[in-house]
Length: 240
Length: 322
Image (cartoon, rainbow over all chains, first blue to last red; front, side):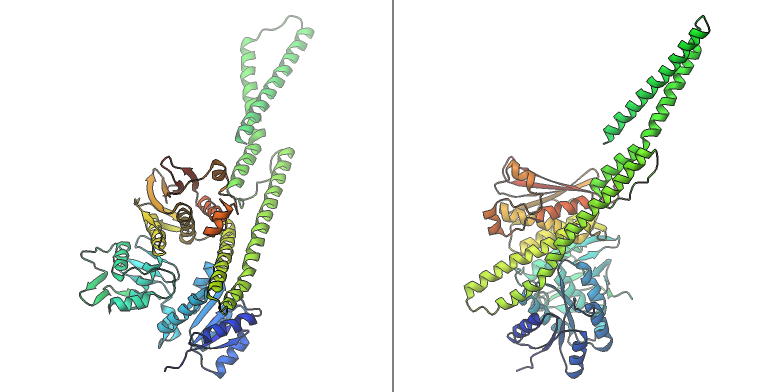
């Protein structure tokens, strides 16, 4: 049996720390709590954690500062908890090095799914490498903004993506020029939207091709690799 | 207001003309008394008449110009509460009116921001207790009870979300970009289909509009969710008409009564108490939609279709068609 991942919950609300800790322990994690930035730093000094769940609204320090400071000393993945209806927080949070963001009040299952997804995504990657992934990514004539659910074409026109298109494109961009099987794509794209029906990967790919104006009969961007799966065939760059 | 200023201009003009004519008549009369034979200066009189009319016209325009400014400001205030204050210039009465107008605008702005700020603060502070409650519910052993509690908390979360979004739809200016409207509608429709709803996007328009992606996504999601909740399905289409894009969302429901058509945009208005419990609406969805559309320079209207069902029509200006 593998070692359960250790999660540090940083929230000034004692009940939320306790309740979230119990919930995570009930779902195969080890969990501890910290009430502020100082106590978080103290715990991180004394023990190894696999992930930090950090509330953005701490009483003495700004959660963003805590996260920024944490980044200067540690590569531990961070999921930010924050107020709903503040889309600006999301991009700011991801910019300063958080790995994901969940709005309060959250569905516990959703937080669980995000924790698992972040752990899967971040294993073995330094925070600097991970932060690259939150910058705007260029591929073919498109720019992809991982903090917003849209892409921008060469003329600067914003093309909105559905949730499933966004997750599929993100999976391709994280694995450029690699053949991804349908099962692999399914694993990479499921997770956060627990209630959604999953369309078949083939249907999702065909819809994404339409959005990218990629000809289904002779696709240049997302190629079909017979009996194996799909591959993003273009060059992907992260502008400095 | 504009009509009022026009009639003011006409009235000032008439009064001035009459006043000057009386003054001239008086002078002529006095001249006649003191200087014997009346003089008949047809040419001089008509020149004088033309001068009088022009002078009166110019004066009337000058006096009412600040009033026209006031009228324009009142029109702007209806659309944009943050419009710049009026310059305080002109005759004393007009200065007073402009100052009173600026004070009124400040008070309205303060009231609006207090109201939205209060709602935003309450909904914001509810997030922590609702989060706690949601985690506590996980400990409830009775499956049926737990499911019902989770359902109640989900509607509370929706109210919190809508309250914050309503506040944001009023006073947060989000960054604007050139948006592919077809792609936006397609993404909203796809998300609804993925959630298992009967939603179809029929026409594509190739329309590009200037707007905020997240705000317009919210706006169309609200309308389409309503169509699904009250009308069973949503048929969405988009066409370009001149310099505007027109989006229509039709459902197959019972439509609305005239009274309901007049009230559905009011905050917290629910079509029917019993049904809103079933569908879990907060009564803010359409208010948020309208605020967002108006902020984008568009309009939204509802009508019952002759074939049955409700049609929501949203129009937005195309980018570069100011």
